Image 1 (cartoon, one colour):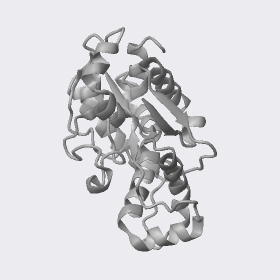
Image 2: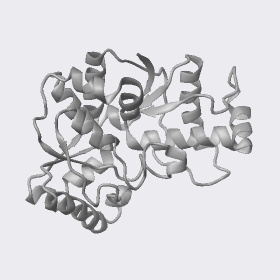
Image 3: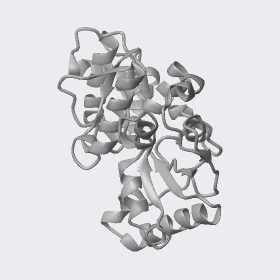
Image 4: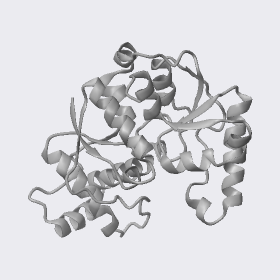
Length: 262
């Protein structure tokens, strides 16, 4: 199994563990993730302006590069996945944006949304399979009670992301179960952690993250797993997480642990 791979900026700086555990695990599973040459920052936030083109160009370059290799483009960071996925939907469905982007980029072959971007978790679910994954693990999680934290970016808007049910997702729970853990659903697992508000109003973020972690604790969860570097930062720095000694880890860390590559 071979894929093009888009890392994004944060995985090269503050979230190196998310990438390292993913690449080591993929290698152990016989999955080849080839990092795109000369990839550029996705912009981190999807541009909402209908006439905004410039901040979408880097995503299109990466999508076109993987398309030209006839490979799916795999992402790890929730924010990067959100931006690139929505830009791809724009290129598929919005002629005005598509024409402007192609006129600007002047690629050898126009990009018309004919590539495919998938998250690492989707790759495991849809291409590799959770059943096969469970057969590959070497060290089970042995029934550890783990809560999935999805946040906003993987799930919404559902019509564009097509990742899972935005109100009742199961992909991370199924992933946890495949690794031998016990996935526990709790009410706040799809609520926003506050995101970038932490840079402007920490009190709001603190309230939001405390509600999330408190919900997890009430439901007997021992650790929280996420795919988003910013969500991880916000959650693990909440007072509730510190008070209750709740660890917040990347999903790739659990995978690497069970494959004995951590």
